[in-house]
Picture 1 (cartoon, rainbow, N blue to C red):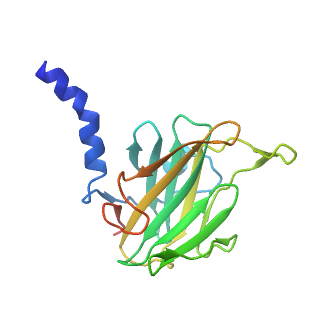
Picture 2: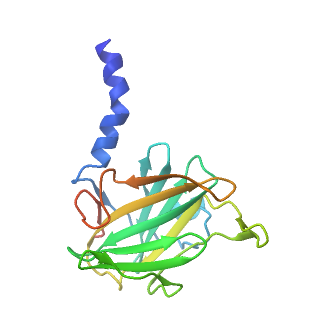
Picture 3: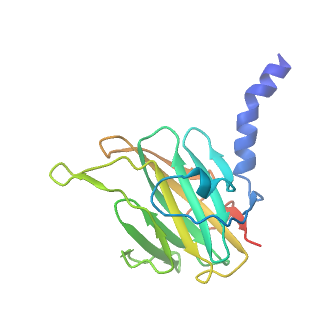
Length: 197
C-alpha cells in the first residue's frame, strides 16, 4: 500500500520540483537553423531541453550563438495563446504575447505599460492564421515558437514565467495555466531560471 501511495504521489512531487524557486534549466546549444513557423521540426528541435507542464503543454528550450529559442506545444488542445514573461535582470519584467498578433509590454512601478502591438524589437513568434474573416475563426495553432536575440538581453541568466491559454477548435478560451504554478506576473519569485552560458 505504501508503494502504491508513493507512486501515486510521484507526479505531484515532480510538479512541485518543477515549480520550486530553484528550478534551473541549462539551455543546450544547437547548430540547427530554426524557422519560426509553428511547426516543431525534429531536425530543428532535436537538441532542445524539454520541460513538461502536466496535461497542458511541453516547453522546449535551446540557444544558438545569437538567439534563444523557446517553444510551447499544447498536448491536448488544438490551439493556444502564450504570454511569455521574461526578466533578464532583477526588477525588469517583459511580457511577450503571441496569439493572432504579437505584442509586448513592460512592468514599470508595479504597473504594466500599454501593449505595443506589432512593434516587437529583437524577438518574434509565430501567430495564428485566419481561417475565416466572416466567422472570425483561426486555423489550429498548437505550437508557439519564439526567437529572442541575445543582444536584446545579453545577461547569462533569464527568469521565465508562462501564461498558457488553451483554446478550443472554435477559438474559445478553454483554460489558463500558470507555469511555474503559484507565481505572479509582477514578481520573479519562483520563476524558471534559464542558464545561457
